[in-house]
Image (tube, helix red, strand yellow):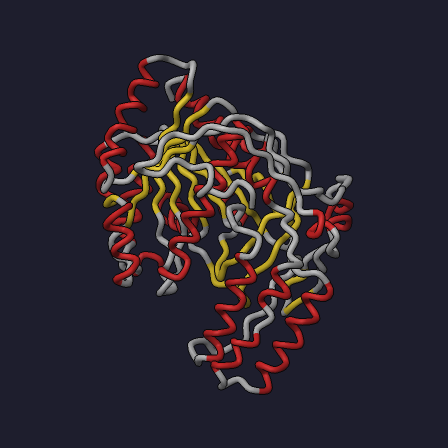
Length: 409
């Protein structure tokens, strides 16, 4: 990517960089066939034209995102850096100077397991960076936090100690927005997870403090359980793929989005759409095959944004997850072969993966077989159909925070 979250982001100790950057679709990538859509283990991913017809919406395949050439600024603060204190002073100075340069403080709580911890940070920071560029003259300050109750390796503990703050430190300030990631569940009941109490305290705190809280996957399910008593239920098969979904309700968060959007999903559980709506949530993005993807509800001073999908995913995220799940099967860590993500691979890539799956079925107890997984051959043929809509969704979220802060909500 020409503008990843690490290339145009100010990290502790760096000098601020402002510049221009545009994102164009790779011509070679554009030449690849569009992703196939078919039925896999009960999940039928509809062709977008079919879904559009169901909702009476015309559909055109996306041509890939292009972000306008606007100056950007995103600052990642760190407790281990003297620069972070200076950056905090700069933030206060900017706020005292008034609305000429807008600033937004985001508290980012990364709960992902060690294997995805650093990549998850890059994904969310990269998406926020692109969103800030789209909004325009705004500086986004991102502070990173860790939640107790999650087991970490020594390597990740070092990163956390150096770059992250304890989640309790959030309560000492007043960030404008909160992002909480999901994690891999250990139990069927979220209330039995070792981190439940800390997570519930954090979500409850946001209700009276933050302008908006964006809760991803398991964190979204936790909020619905905490506030509304809505229990999630396990899916018969993991939901994995890129799905075409419709904008069902116009809202500040969906401004500028087309009537149909692509969003990746990767989850084992679901929240009933009907129960959410009965408790006052508005489902903004959904499809018949995928249920809801984005739902919102104002509670206290905060707009809660629940997201079951993963607009932050990089182009290869689902491929990496699929390879990881195959490796777990070959190691005997899971009992079934994972399904191939749907709506994501072109015909040739799908053929390669089906062929490899046949080898796995023939030699299910050979962990070394994962060495032959055709990762590079498939990765170079991937086509990102969700980046533009993900950027717009997050840009609208930043604008919503600005609006709520301006009116003193």
